[in-house]
Structures are given as structure tokens and as C-alpha cells.
Length: 335
Image (cartoon, rainbow, N blue to C red; front, top):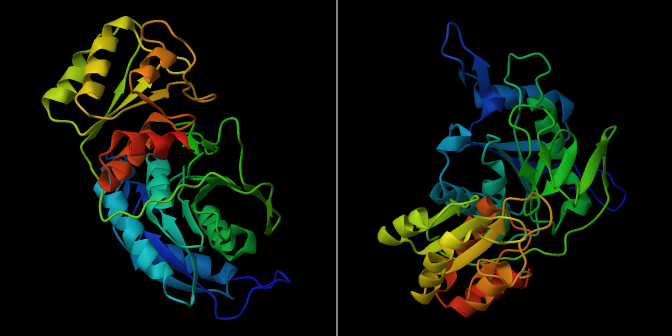
């Protein structure tokens, strides 16, 4: 960790958790595509010459493509990272992760890890033997982000393409471009400038949940024009514990879905409303049938600026803490 004079104290240690992802993949021979082939230790070895004044605690946690992660694994990873952060000589943790669901793992960590020390998730959009490989640079500056004093009390963050984002705000906005992450309407917390970080703002909206596990039985249903309630009723038939609806506009749904949503709430199952719009959020504005205000009056919880995938993670955590509908509403709407 850096001291007040911005100098790195000797003996500082950053934990690096490896979970897999494109950063450790190569284009294989023949037609098998891009597959895991790079050893985690080789990435650490490549990093060491650029960061000689920092020790690394390398932890090979898994080797999973991003879509193979699950909410249960995300929670366990968060618990394991928190345990290491409690070691006094550890300055922070870098989590090497696939990019497809990186934002969800980051948000899970943001919700459940109770530590002032920074956690930075990073990965790569280009595989290891692709021209312009971005993995090593992202890893290097994630380590340096953990050493920046401004990173304390900032929760979990994501570093990609020289930008550092809050876990609650970041999302993957491009499926293949190297500049794939953004926080729409808010922007980064900071930037890489030369070999240093420049922070431009601090977080003020972090929620923390002390839980022993999560409730994984939460569905996310996307509603589009003309859709009815079939997927909502399917979730109910399978005993869903919570439901997130990705709606239209500021949180409005087609009329064919309204009755099932109201019935879900009447059964004591929390329904959280998000929007497919990447900016603005879901808010109780419209009072017509299916409008956000009318649904809110019926007990639907508005997720504000949380995306559908992050609202689902937060509802999984919230349901592990309480089943009281009003308390769950407050956990969402106060932030």
C-alpha cells in the first residue's frame, strides 16, 4: 500500500485470484477455437518484472470460462477473497476473471465482502496469442490500483482498458471490442495516466450485506412488446423465490403480463423491476395498467439504475438476509 507520499511501502503484498477467462486462453490448432491453454503462474511470472517492489500471493481458485460461473460460485469466491483480505500484510486482491459475467461477480463481491481493502476484477478481451493482447496490461494496472490509497473503502471494482469502474455501475457494452466496458451515464472512478492512477470521483452508494449464503432460486424475465405472462407463470410453477423483470422504458410492461406480476407479489414473492435501457433506470412514473407507478403501488420493487443481471444478484443476497417484503424493498430503494 502506498503511504501519504504516494510511495509504495516495501513488503506490500497483493493477492491474485485466478478463476479463468480469455486472459489465459489461446487460439488452438484446427477448428477447436479459443480454449484455455495458458498456465496461471506464467501470467504472474510475466507480471513480476514490471512490479518488483510488490509481493504476490497467487491463488489458483479455478479455471472456468466466464459462462461456467454460477451465483453460488461467485458467493464462495467472495468469501474466499474476504478471508485473504483479513491477513494484515495483504494490501488488496486482484481477481482474474472472464469478461462475460465479470460485472455480476464483481457486484456479488461488492455486496458481501466487508473490508476497506480494494478488490479489483480484470481479464482480457483478446486471447493470449492474439495481436494486441490486453491481458498483461490489465493485470499490471489492477495490481497498481490495489496500491493506490484512493482505492480504500471503494468496494469491488473492475479495471479494463485503463479505466477503473465501480462494480455497481459497470457493464459490458461490447461483446468483442477491446474497449468493452463502461458505466453508462456515470463513467469511470478513475483512469490510468502514464504509470499512475487519477481518481475523478468516489463512491457514495455502496450497500453491504452480511449473509451466510444466497438464495439462488431467482429468475430474470425479459419482457418485450406484445409478450404475455407465460414465462412468469413458468417461474411460479417451479417455485421461484424471487423474480426480476427487465421491462420497457422507465419500468413498464405489456398488459398481458400485469396479472401474473400482481399475483406473484400477492403470494409474497418479491418482484423487482428493471429496464432494458442502459441509462436512466426503472422508476415509478406511469400510472396506466402495466406502468411503473401502478405496479409500484401493487408492491413491485423498483431497482433504480441497477441492471437486470445485477438486480438478480442483489435479490439473491437480500433473500438470504430476510424474507420480509418491506425490508427487501428498503434494501433496493434506499440505494
